[in-house]
Image (cartoon, rainbow, N blue to C red; front, side, top):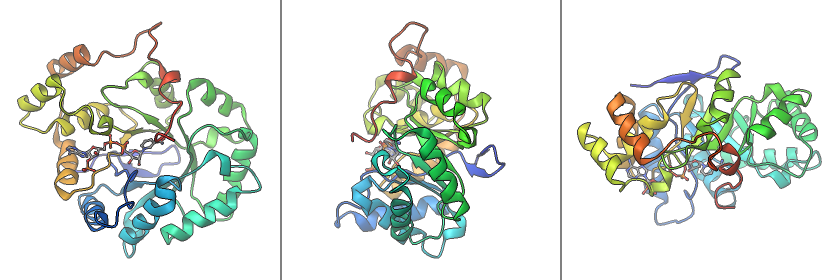
Length: 287
Ligand code: NAP
């Protein structure tokens, strides 16, 4: 079963994709990582998220190998480092990503986190890449609501297609303001680290809910973030068993009793609590 969502330009993508941080770094695990990504494509997880940052280009290279001969099946997302996003350097770094990925065009190109370059310059740079046919659309990552409001005031800022944000059971800050705002704008949120980098999966409440569904804790964690409209989750898996389990999460529907238990164990953000979007979006990929 594949569930889909759409960008504001009408382009349809699966709500469950695949992440690639920490993939491609170790020659000993490369084959398993490639096999896992390929299996994910077979299962309909055809949105692949990568970045020039990951392994200094090694993740993009590995993705390029996996999608060779399957380019048409894939919705390819990559990210530019903020220090590369100025007018003098953006095109060069986009070209390098295209070369590593072995493609003519990236489907969605994101600013990895806020940059010291003005957003006016970055948006103009992204639009030029679209004009050159190098990217189909652009978006951002790790921008909080204040930064998104500022972006909307920049000429062309409203063409931002998506915001990629930390979102999992243990990090629910975006539910407070950024997620509802993004839904209103019809701007998908790409939930990164949806499994809390694996760190959530031993939690007793998650294990209990998983037990009720005869499911794995990772599947419940994914079903939890995917219960919202306009959310795309991009778990990273480096084994076929994990990617198959993740794909099967699309079958799981959490009931009110599950949500209540999960809310008790992982409280949602509340007005005046410290956990709003502004303190979950400042750091990316440990960089
Ligand atoms: P994650 O997807 O939350 O967790 C990955 C960890 O979960 C890995 O250790 C993986 O193990 C394990 N795992 C995956 N499927 C599992 C399953 N079914 N059962 C048990 N364990 C499972 O963490 P993430 O890699 O940080 O986030 C996902 C992606 O989001 C990244 O790869 C990257 O593409 C993107 N990201 C973006 C940003 C940003 O700033 N924009 C920041 C962080 C991440 P195995 O590898 O052994 O399968």
